[in-house]
Length: 187
Length: 270
Image 1 (tube, rainbow over the protein chains, first blue to last red):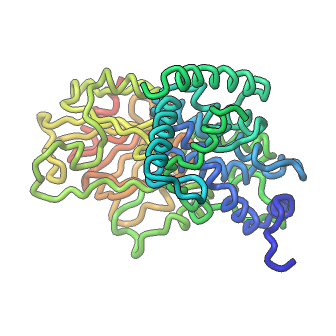
Image 2: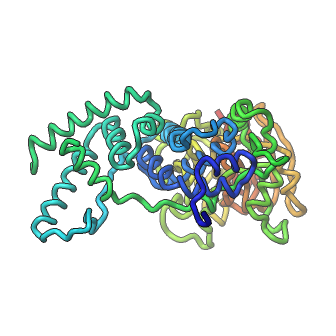
Image 3: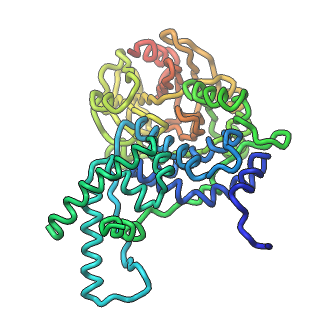
């Protein structure tokens, strides 16, 4: 199976044996997830980069605590997100996260009519505006689950809360968002 | 899946995230030891748990390194410095703006990259440690606050004393004295490795705190900040500098000062 991407478990096993090249591959594999998670928490690309860097260095030092066969994403997310939260605390400031839409984004392959595309774009923009306007807890749990596409376990790791709390918090956040989204569609 | 969740999932693909940096190229990992991943950076020792705690204890006792300009034929690479001081972590470099003479117009903070102009009470609100002010100089004429990442972890405060009797104005900045404060600690072991001929270093005590009087031109110093990250900053004055370890806060007093003047200023910090 030449060219087959190495499994995470193999990479972690090699890294735990001291193979830094394997760990660098782990960093490459998870850096986008780590960076975006840190960005979601800090609201700053520079702070997110620092948090992700520090998180990966700390994860490297703690590799022996990683249980072989365990899913790596929650483990990495927990370390990086904790670093991001520490940075927010240490700077004693919280940058408001203002997520934006990518220009020219069009989901799917089918080209919609100009009218349909316009409506879809307006709707996406309105929904994102509503998400940005949510309280921090609501925004973080929604962004984790739907924008970063984290599982419940991963969201719990990223937000530093129990998985059960993720479910209840997400349910309340969706209810608040739905109320605004459906009651006043184009207000 | 309900409609709202479907829309949110679709929206996720349309988010304009900042570009992800290639972290694999900037992270410096500790070297291997005996075929095993070291559980902590060299010099931090111990088991994983202990080393982790030790690391944060070390963060409180972060180290500072002073390098003299022109003392080394070739500036040491950041990796080389890391090797000397057994620090294997992330580097950040902050190069303050050059200080041409004559001074260009504009706010001092902007010219020297000191951060935002503020007031002492406002700076104190944003800084977790008590900002020490030298009573011999009185209230500063200007106060600047630089937050991370351009400053070390927990920020950096600079007090500006434009003119003070008996202290010449430094041509490089147009002010008499600059007092800079950030979290960190002095480690004299670093000085011996970085200081060379042309600049003298003397251990001093001022106000009960350990410090170092560096006589001669400096242009750089290195230290690990409160998060354990190695930093490199340029010193703004080609003049004398007193570096003081004030219980976890590194205070730099820079200007065309005599040693006696600098020690008097340091002793009056409160």
